[in-house]
Image 1 (cartoon, one colour):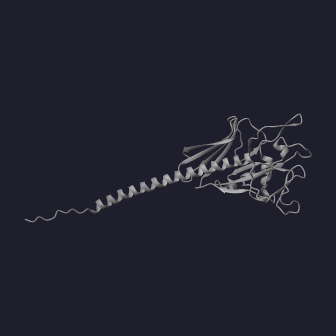
Image 2: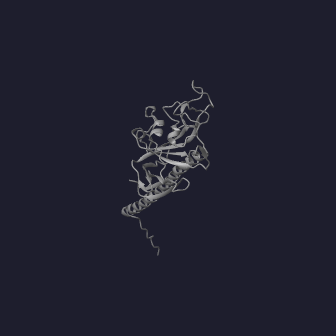
Image 3: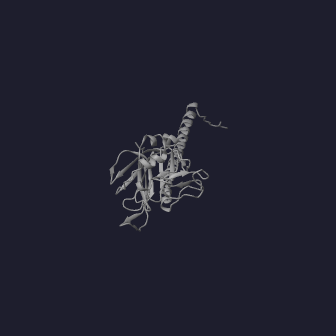
Length: 281
């Protein structure tokens, strides 16, 4: 005797349950992939910032700056005078009396936590009215090649994947030294003299905080804000025995933060990176 097929159809409720479970699994998979992409992007961006800082350290150590023959510098008095080639006061290649001192890095430019600038700093080759090389940054009268000077070698950069700086602080021998800053300068050590004679020795890269001011908080981009004055006036010329600058960055796509520490601890200037779960506060 022929038996009929015993078929069983899914009910509407069962179909809905399957769709709900499948949808939940899909959402979990997408969330997992998205979270992994966010962590990967954060790691890449924070490593890129650390690499940028290390590049600036190396630039100062080797004497590199972004001139490209578009800046002239003269030293007719107590401070450098910058101009562009072909100007009435300078001609191309005549950088008499000026030397490259270092570079400065400014974060949170114009209130944008993803923006940062790199400035070149020049100074006097000889102390004003003297034939002797400057022994201190005060003697060298540091000046940034940036507005409102006609010459400008500023590098305008941005972090990747929305990485944003939350705060930057500096400490001396482990003791916080207010105020918080957004800018620091790296300079080459200057000549030393003993009894009027030049003391030989290897040059080192020195770290100087540039103290917060209304101009820096506003970004220092507009000519009226006088970036060179910020560098020259607000740079802390004192060499602390153990100065450390700490920068805390937040991820835009994962619950992570990165702390970049810049210091020497009595040795060569270098950076370290620590990645944490949770955001900077």
